[in-house]
Length: 257
Image 1 (cartoon, rainbow, N blue to C red):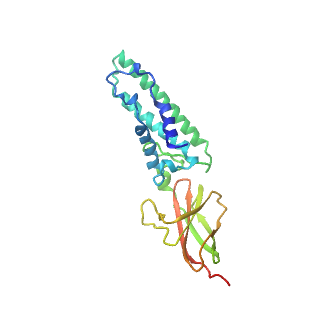
Image 2 (cartoon, helix red, strand yellow):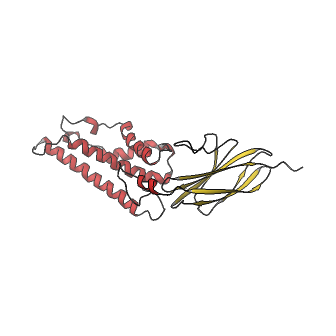
Image 3 (cartoon, rainbow, N blue to C red):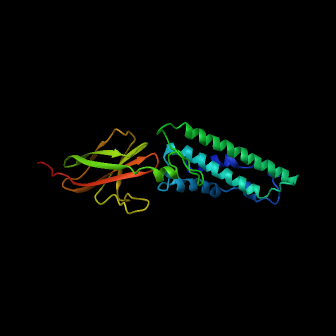
């Protein structure tokens, strides 16, 4: 799904289609939410749970949980906005506001159940859960608590074989459970900078492959030039979003006449 489709999905889940049920004093926000206003909720989820990834680059397997959490956040905000207009002792127009609030509440409860069912059906490592607002959900991947408490993944990297135009590498990972993927990079300059707060991989590095098989711990970096120095890096990513990095420098062999 592209960004426009994600926005349309949320719009269909929260838009009020009967303006006659709204008091004239109510903020017209409910009737005319712009795409940018809806996009804000998606971006909040991205900032909270995928700070290094743009919405347009979100992995396919993470689209659905992002939508579930964004829908919860948006419906909760709608309930709060409606609630401040309600006079608990009044009737008439305020009764209609009660009905609107109850509708949002029902939608929120359904969205919350969808998300809970999704998380409970994940199993040990099939996908990931996300945080809604600042709530910390124990035993849910991608939650703040999980990121704070889980051990950081670690790697060891070995150069198995070096040729004139290739390098064979192998590695071992630990503390990477539940495992998500490996990433292999190559560059002629330094790749990993652990002093960076967010993006620790240099923009100049080339991503060669993403490996989702935990047992595949070797790779051939090809297309290299002879007698050149290269930086090779491997990143392991856990389902919690935590990453481990390792980098080595290697010089390719000369061409044998």
